[in-house]
Length: 243
Image (tube, rainbow, N blue to C red):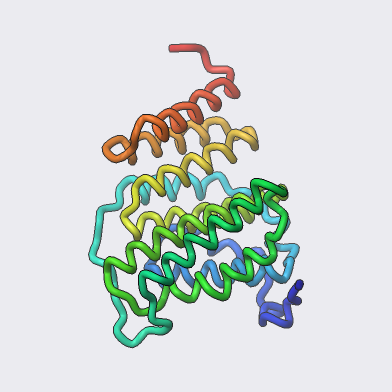
């Protein structure tokens, strides 16, 4: 099912300027929820402004600085917020993410993507501003970062790189809020992969190095090897000589 812009109330506000807010990394978690709600609505409506949006390299640099300099902070809990979120909801997000990921592995990232976006828009994004304990909130943001990564990859697989970048960036912000440095590192590696693919080799190097630096105290050998491989690939693309 495809929605129209009128169906979701965006017909009068679809402009490149309002789309660019989804490149932002700062603000509170409610800002992230608002950005993702707007972005997924455009995605569901197949808004050409969103689907044809371009990658903005400067946004990578801003997100890297913010993520590297971030420190764990107490989670903001809202007593009167809705919906009420528990560990079972987090488990459901993770199970659904795995389900859609397996479909993508079998049939390609574009297969069942509209169903994934509808689930993400209607079930996951509203939970970000819900009511939960701090431990549940941390787990929720980590699970949300993981499914946001999957949403980004499905856009990437369809060649919608501007859209993918915006999802990757918001996923990194969710990982930051959750305190999951490893998830953040993987998202930075994803963005390094994208930058490599697009020929933005200097940005790819910086993104890979940020993943290495930010995860050096928490990562095992396997993800660190991935981060170094992303950097090596970018140096090769750049034609850099071995130091």
